[in-house]
Length: 47
Image 1: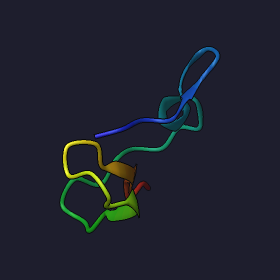
Image 2: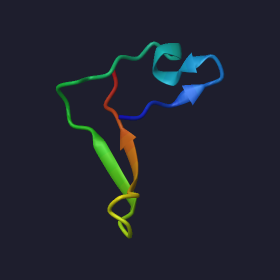
Image 3: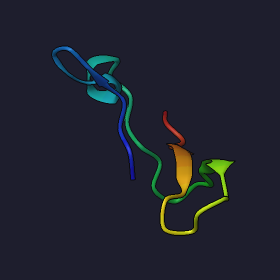
Image 4: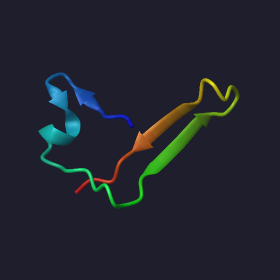
């Protein structure tokens, strides 16, 4: 799980959003070359 941080805390908290834990989320794989070093961007569904 990853969270976008801004200088003064979590972006999601600063914007007043909440994570939707029962919804689909997006995973963007940028590199598959080394299975031990995957580069993945995790995007949570928010409300």
